Image (cartoon, rainbow, N blue to C red):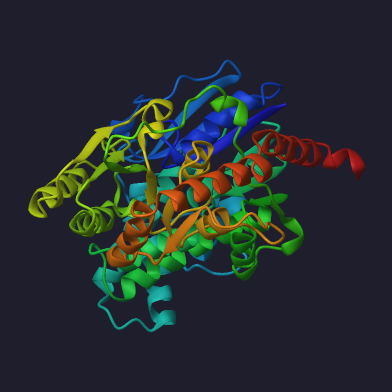
Length: 475
């Protein structure tokens, strides 16, 4: 069975998170062949791989939303499209119900179609004008038109790409990846599996609300755009995977058929950590660590501010922000500058590390994300018997406090998002109580070992792959 796994904004260019999960899936499911259809922002990322591909990964198809359109730049005469094709694209541009996605794909994918010509042509102008009138927009039409063009340029650029043939299409998020997976299933009449680690539309909405590059009504336009993309993925999917109950409920609220949803938690293998000496040698310091990508969604600045509060109360603390920082160099420099401004002592940012070497030396682990799914970092930290302080996003509360029927107790504390004082207070409580750290660390180890087994995750996906692949045989 050949599985086309579709990834957006992660594998193989970004270390950790969903990228690590994709690598784990391919390595753990050796009986399947995988092809990766990866979607990145800019062509400058081409072949900048952070992973060594396993033997069962047969091909990688790199696709870039900006700067990689082989058909762009042709001279345009602003020719009209045939009526049926123009009407299909108009439904898309106007974000209407029942968008004929297959015809949209065939139209945009036609070698005679040129994205720039269409976006600057009469058909797009007419569709934009009708949407503008329908929505009774207070903003000027020129700004409205340019916003629509910026929304559809990356989508059309993606639709021009060739979707490889496969037996199963598996998108690891909704949005652009979900569109490709859904279209692959429609075009080739094959099953489509959608996994969501976080809820794509909610994450994009949070980012847009906080963004400065777009304002007012235009934020709403972008949010609606991503909801439209995700709706098609939900509708077309044969199965939708969520990592935990809270996200499954959100998927239902967003219009996903409850009958399609299945919960398969992330997993970890205790055997991977066998023989690791996780006990820290006492040295008179409390070491507080984070294994985390240095990006805005992880809110490293709040973490740094919290660390300063901790150090004011517990002077003998050291801080370790461990993880890659090349994804957003500007944000990394801002974090370094904040450390200097706050005069935060003993705070290091060593980049990517070997967790088996570094985590044994930690007393407390911290996660300050604005948005998460089910963080593998927390499960990994639990295998080292370390207590956690994490923001109350995704399944962090469930991981630390347990699911229904789990009577183990708390493996750490949850805190509100972007609340440096609350995060600091909980770190201080752990820093001042060695017995509490040990008890919570042991509870975390027991929970991860008992309820989050890697083999259960692999078995769950094997069952889904086989079920949807053989669905046609049952008809």
